[in-house]
Image 1 (cartoon, rainbow, N blue to C red):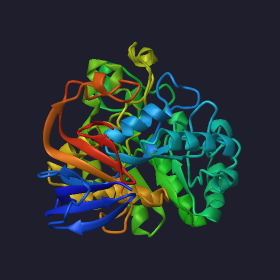
Image 2 (tube, rainbow, N blue to C red):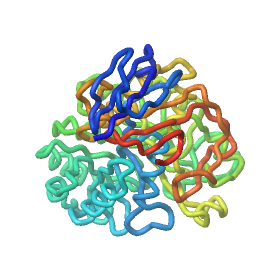
Image 3 (cartoon, rainbow, N blue to C red):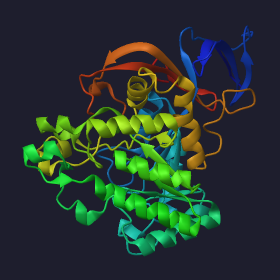
Length: 428
């Protein structure tokens, strides 16, 4: 079995240490470890983190392989420092049966770049009318524990209650796309000053907040777990904070783009900034950063949403919603949270690895960098500064809002169970 010695890395941003990988496991962590017959990776000045875990990735396969496949998406994930991703259910066909989630799971195993944990649909065909085969998906080889109709809201309170009750049997979680559909009919962007000036139909914050308020109450009522996808408003933060103060089983995620970008960018009418939920105000961005820092928001999730060129390079109203994010997420978090002093690297490890792994019940990931633990690791150069060029992305799609923008940090190496999937910033 192969051995690798990572020499002089700052584990979680602390003092430099050596980390010896033997096969799939971390064999030792300490100063002055001997290389022996191990391959040596010189890591002076680099940060070593547990492999990143994404709770919210759209891999598009099956059905939309023109925008992404499991293979291209997991390659993008590895480049971004991820060793595991949760693949959302809005594929064609929808991942609402054991057969489809097992297909996605097996495609992930075949790709070999990161682990793929399928997310099962809550309702049949994402239609919101009938519960999907939750138990069968949980009992499948994929072992599904997260269920979501993401892309659509489970807006029927009775269906949501039934789903929350059902998943308790196998310690599952319902991940809600919080969007009251009648309040967002025809909406094009955040409702506010900018939408008024541009004459675009606004997407009010209350459309998100009202669903979150309902669902945390439902989760408390049935004593079940609810996870809030891509939380985007200051009001949503306060509702989640209140629910957590009650001790309810509520978790939440924020995307990198909602930590950095605002609705002012929509003035360009560039469809690359069209996303669901929409980019919000500067005040919302600041509230989201503070909530991630204090733990009200549990984790960062990319909501990686690839689209082919023709679905984004068109007029604003016709453009698809979504942004790719796997390859830039860590850089955006460094810029918004680490470089601002809101989080240290240990905090990044918690919000981008440990917590999402716990929420998704993903064993073997998000573990401490310690002897005896699985060697799922990410090596980062925090001093790097580079301009984003989507032409070099591993993802099949190029719809990034960061093209031409300088971002800090670069993933130098990613290890999946001891095997390097990325070396010197490139796919191994």
